[in-house]
Length: 98
Image (tube, rainbow, N blue to C red; front, top):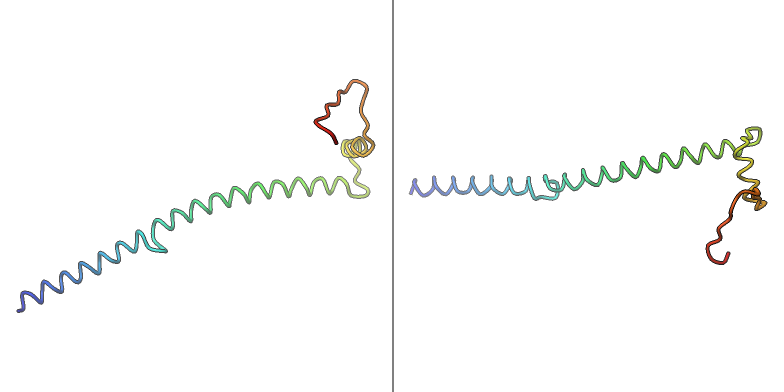
């Protein structure tokens, strides 16, 4: 009887340890979930970097449009766009009907 009880306890311990090992790898907070989370974090960091660059560009353009901070290139760009101005040596290509 003592022999069966000892083996039963050993099997129970092995089963519990196996269960913990499987949960460590496959569980909701396991190693596979961590890998997927790391990949998502990397993608979001890249997206954040692109958005920060876009924000800096927009801030720079906003500063150029502020009163008292007239940039010649920005002024020419806005005037040409609003007045539909082109130089004699420029070609205009129209794609479809406006």
